[in-house]
Each structure stands twice: as structure tokens, then as C-alpha cells.
Image (cartoon, rainbow, N blue to C red):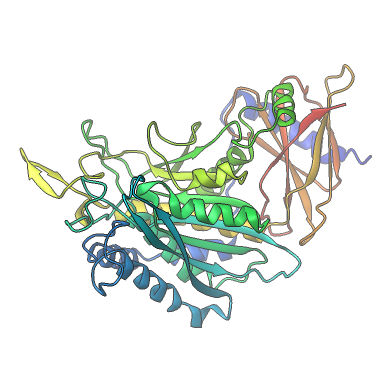
Length: 454
């Protein structure tokens, strides 16, 4: 075994300092990703939200045939908008409408309705690599009454802000050659039961897609809280499940044995979004929320979690309930309704940049290491971590071994390793470990948690 003494011992002082004090943070930004982040246009995003608001009402029960109003007109608009970026994509970008039928007399919809998801696919360049990254936002909306399909319902933030994020990603990253396929899903059916997401998640499961990450953007443009008047556009939340919805008895046994309740695939994705987003976006703190979603509410990432995919929700830190699911009006000097004037478009830009950087970095990275294990046998203050080279995709140039103390939410230290095993002078009883694949440009994969075994 190569013990790579130089790498380990050069890291020991840094490790010790980091665990007990504030260590210096080094930001290495890839030029391609940094340029893509800088290309995000606030004016484009404002124009798109303005157009969405102009459809008057995007309720799932609204008109499918009116060319200017309703959810049908909104779907056609999104389809045409994505299609307009195809010529500059060098054949990478395509767009399709995926229809599904839901509802009935006893459902929340009250009747059966056929809805449309608009799916933009940016095809990966490596034909041997079947990984897919999905980014979600819903374009349907509602006002104060869930089934009111005619009264004005602007839906600027919920979820026009998320749609603006995805549309800029379609415009920008379709020009970047990446080995991995990215799908941007403009979903319907969210406000009546996550129907559009359920359809796509079930389809991904049925077709056995190698969907490695799902990032849902739902309300990412409001920076001012109702009631408390708290205001900030420098913090964004990432929600993630701890215990997987699909956990089996064997998975439960392994989780308990390793005390790994905070190391699900979804939680590793959340940490990845935090680290990568903060690397490329100035003045933005990505806050990990150790919940799948807010109390009493749901998002389009959840159907994907229930199918076993790693999925997270991106959401503003300050919610304004005067604007969410409200009729547009003014009472006692308070303005109600989800109108465009209340959107903080600099906040939308930064949150879009966080999404874009995370997705492109992941799409450029090698495949995650396989069979990552922590040796749990023997009484020793060293920890032996082993793993296998990924069986497909571009081969890693090296690996990062990640370390954190058991009471810490984020990985604290990375050690670069060129072998497929490493022995570290840190007790397995006091730390958690994981491993990432990394290429020569520094693009790292998601982290594979090191589960202990004999």
C-alpha cells in the first residue's frame, strides 16, 4: 500500500489547526465555470418573469387553448424559449413536451386534466457515461384559492424565480461541452400535488436512469420576510432528507452501525451544492437545513427522493406569507400577492449562479468512487479507508479523502490521494470520512461516505 507519507504528514498540521481554529480557505475557480457564472443576465431573468406574469393565471385548471392566458400558453412559451437557444448549442440542446393525465372528481383538482412538463436536455458528450443531473422548477401557480383558474395570479416568485434560474442555465450551459447529460425540468402540477415531478420521477425509475442528482428550485427570489421584516439576499437554504425514504432493513442496519443519519446521498448532494456554490458566488452563504422540506408543505424534489434519487430543495431563507398563495390586493397598508415588484433579482442571480456552478462542476467531474469502506476491525488510532476505481466514465486523476468531526455538519478537510486506499492518523471513533473522485482540473464528484465494516 502506498502510504503517501508526504501528503499525509503535510496535512497533519493543517488538520489540527482546522479542527481547533479558523483555517484559511483557498478558492480555486475553474475558468470555464467562472465565465459561465459571469454570463448570467439579470435583465434576461427580469424579462422572463415579466412574461410569465403576463399569462394572468397559470393554475393547473386554467386554459390550455388560449394563446395569451393560462397554463397552456405558458407551456408553449417555455418550449419556444428553450428552443431559441438550440442554434448556439452545437447540437447539445433539445426540448420536448411530456404530457400526463391526473385528477378526477375526488381529487384536489376536482376533475381530470392533462398537463405538460417542458423538458430541456443538454446531452453529454461521453456516450459511455450515462449519468444525468436534473434541475427542477414548477411553472404552474395559484392565488388565494387553489382551484381559482381565472382570477389574476402572477406567480412571480412562486415559482417564476425558479423558472428564471432554469432558463438562464439552459441559455448558458448548453454552450458548454460536458461529458454528463443535464436535464432542466419545467414542471406543471406542483400546486395540486407535485404531479409533474411524480410523473418524471416514476419515469426515471421505470427507465432505470442513472440520475445522480436532483436540484429543485422553488421560491428563490424573495429577500424580505413578512412579520419580522428580516431582510437578506446573502443566505440561501438547501433542504435535504436524512434517512432515505427508500431505506431497507439492511440499509437501516448499516446506517445505525455507522451513526450515519446525516450522511444520506441527498445530504452529500446538499454539502456539494454548499461547497461549490460558495466557491463561485461571492456574498452568498449556503445554509444546510436538516429537513426534507418546510413543515406542512412540499416540493418537487420529494417524489424523486421517494424513488431513491439524491434530491434537494433550494429555497429562500426569508419567506413572505403576504405574497405566497394570496390574491393581489392591499389591506391596512399591506400589499398582498406574488407580484414582480417584490422580487430581488440580484438574489435570483446569485442563486442561479450557485445552481449553475454546482451542476457544471458535477457534470465535468469523474464518476464517484465505488465500494468506499472504512476498516472497523482492530484497536488502533489510525483509520484505513479503501475504495475502487469507478467502472465507467473518464478516470479520476486522483481522489479527495474528506474528514469531519462527528458533530460537524460540513466536511472540514480534503486530502489529495493518488492511490485507492489511505491510512490516516485519526481515530475512526472520532471522525467521519468520505471519498471523492477528482480530475486534473479539480472538478470533484459527489462524496461517497466511508461505511465501516470488517
